Length: 71
Image (cartoon, rainbow, N blue to C red):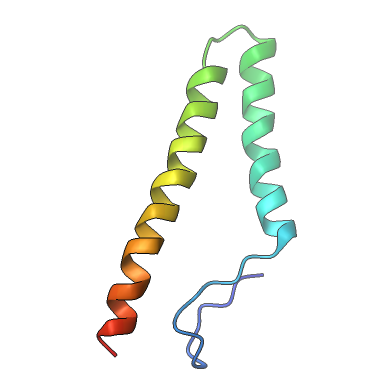
């Protein structure tokens, strides 16, 4: 599923589309339960998920060049 590196790939973790789909399905299930039970958390869950993806992507774009430079 995920490759932790060690074979010269620069420590990049390769995620399959299946792993990403399963993670998304778990999140969407929580959103659906929140919406169905009228808990009012569905918007917060979706906003948090989008923020997480954006923040981790930006962090990756910043850190990858730094670690490549230090090699």
